[in-house]
Length: 202
Image (cartoon, rainbow, N blue to C red):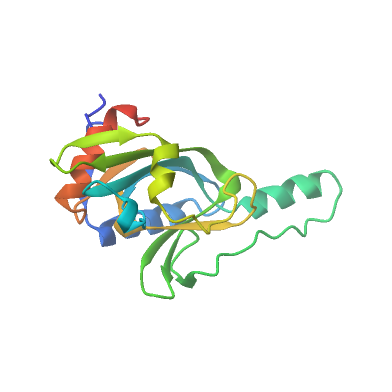
């Protein structure tokens, strides 16, 4: 049964370390197969403050895909065709230490989940503002772009490389059908998560 914020009953409240340990364990249990996962994150993008007429701008991102070694699958297909399996996905330059194939620590000490862009099945984004009366309202991407500094990220759809995302930004994470709710997310972002939850895929 779907809960209001887009996750099913049976979701487990868990801190960041618990979420990391869960993913590391899943990596160890299935080292040669991909693992279904999804996460929903709430962030506050960098804004042009002088042009922003509201209290706050939020970006809600839901990513659905698989954790695993994309390059192994590509090389398996190449070898099957009789070609040399020497494909190598570009690694992320933000990771300082890898704890497992899907969990790492950034060079700044942040806990990261790592995944390959070509194993992503769906990625959706919503934007919400909190107006000067404290009310939440969804706005479209074009309006949000007026307030935000341009992103310096690569092309998510076509780059064959590892992506990283901070556990601290995730409100919810699902791995191997187990859903976890981040207990370290502040109430403000959880309220935004609840507000937009009806649009998220369960």
